[in-house]
Image (tube, rainbow, N blue to C red; front, top):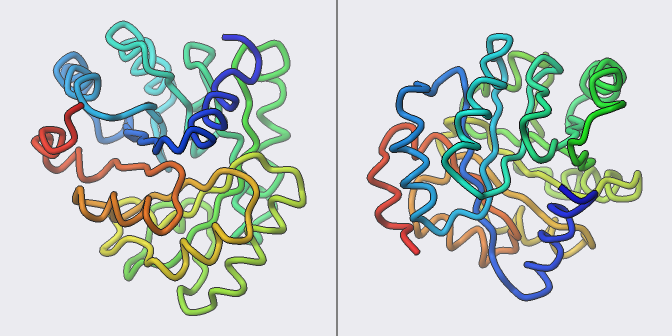
Length: 243
């Protein structure tokens, strides 16, 4: 991949008023024997990206899965890692996530320093991404693994200021996350308020289980929507998202 090609394509899509959809595959919850049929459905859908990663994944599982996925699609495969062990050069890009909603230094900068030795000579496109976990009615896996608390939904100004601080720090993407398996997606007020302040692309994920909820997220201001659990629970959801 040419440097910055995936990030630049995201910017180009946004400038053309195109909405992006990433299918998130968690290696810990996905059967590799299902890869061919699952990716066929992804390819036939309106999905534009494939994200691979999870909060807790066995070592080498990500690399094996990414290699298999790449055999069946031309969509960009982007790592969404919960740990440095999930970094593999077989992917196209890496969301270099900083958990700016929390105050655990390991997930603000510590893990990133650990990752440098893997990335120094890598061809992965590294995309600096601010990651904001917002409470969703139940404890998210991210919360458990990182030992951080999500941001309360009602304190919208603090969410806005956190996202803006990430932008000022030089982050290229901002990711608002309700958490894997969230009981409810982020509401319009949060997404619209954050989007109105940002000059960088906004990604929204967590709790989106219907085409209507996906469309709402776009309407409120999401440039990219990420859906994972809905596809894990019901692959027929792809039928509603065909090209």
